[in-house]
Amino acid sequence: MNKPFSDLVIIELAGVLAGPSVGLFFTELGAKVIKIENPKTQGDVTRSWKSPLENKEGSTSAYYWSVNAGKEILFLDLTLTKDLETFYMLVKTADVLISNYKLGDDVKLKVDYDTLSQINPTLIYASINGFGHDSPRTAYDLILQAESGFMFMNGEKNAKPLKMPVALIDLLAGHQLKEAVLIALLKKYKTQLGSCISVSLFDSALASLANQATNWLIAHHLPTAQGSLHPNIAPYGELFLTQDQHQITFAIGSNSQFKNLCMILEIDLFENEQFKSNQQRVANRDELHLLLNEKISQFFFDDLFKLCLKNEVPIGKIRNLKEVFELPEAQQMLHHFTNNQISLTSVKSIAFQFLK
Image (cartoon, rainbow, N blue to C red; front, side, top):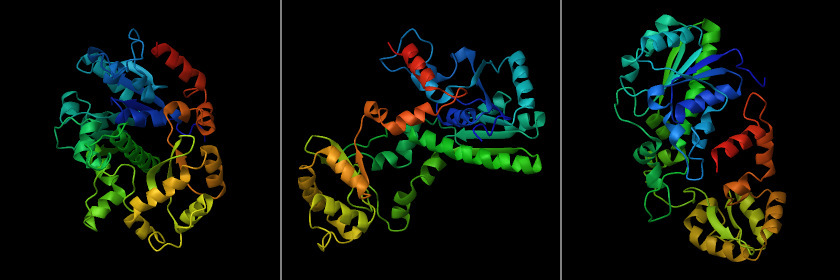
C-alpha cells in the first residue's frame, strides 16, 4: 500500500500551490504526474518566487519544490498546434487532469472538459477556481483570506487584520479537491465513467470556518481578532513564559485537564466558582491567565513539560522552524520518504543548490 496509485497517470495544468499540491499528493503515492508548463512564461510563476537567501543564479525557487518534487516536467505551448497535439496524446491515456484556469481560458486553449472528454471519456477532470465557475476574478490566497473572514479574525485584539503565514486557503482547497478526485476514482473503478469535478477557493474557505461560522450563524456572535485565544475554550492559546524564558501555551479542552494543570502548578483554582466550568473560565480568562502565569514563571520548561506529558495536559512550546525540524517526530517524518519521493538526502541537496 506504499504506492497505491502506481497505475495512475495524472496531467497537471495547474500552477502556484493549490492545484500542484494535489499533484504532489498523487506523486507521493506512486502516480505518474506530468506537469505541463508554458515555456513562453518560463513555466510555473513560483519558479521565480525566491527568498533573499536563495541562489540568484538558480532557475527554480524553494517554493516551487515544495509542491513539485517528483513530477515529470514537460514544457508545452498549448497555443501551438504541434504542442497541443502532443498534449492530446497524453490525455488519451491519462486518468486525471488537474487545472486552475481563469474563467474562459480553458476553452480558449481547447483544454476544457467538453473538449478533453471527447478524447478520453473516462477522464477525471479536476479543476480549482477562485470564486466559482462564473467569476472572472483572479484569486490569490491572500485575497481569499481577506474575503472569507480569516484576516478579520486573525491577529491580536485591536491590531490590524493579519494573514496567516502559509497560503492556507490554497492548501484547504487542495485537500478538498483530493477528496473529490478520490471519490471520482472510486466511481470510475465501479462504472468506467469519467467525471468533471471542481472546487472553489472561496467555498473551501467558507467550509473551513467551522465553529467560527456557526458561532455567527447560530449564536450571532461575531468573531473578532483575539490572537491565539479560542472563543469557546479557556485556557486555550494564552501565552506563558517559564523561568528559563521559554514561551509555552496550553490547549485545555476539558475539566479533567484543567484539574490536572492546577495539580501540577499546585494552585487551588479548580474549586473556585470563577473557574469551575469551561464557560466560567472563558468569561474570566484574563484573571485566570494572570494567576496561571504567576505559577508557570516559577517552573523550568523541561520540568513542566515532563509533568504535563505525564498527566496528559496538552502543552506546546512556541518553536521556530529550526527547532521544529530538530524534533524527533520531524526527523522521523523526513526519514520516512522513499526513493520515489523526496529523500532526506534530496532535501539537503535541493537546499544546497538553491541557497547561497
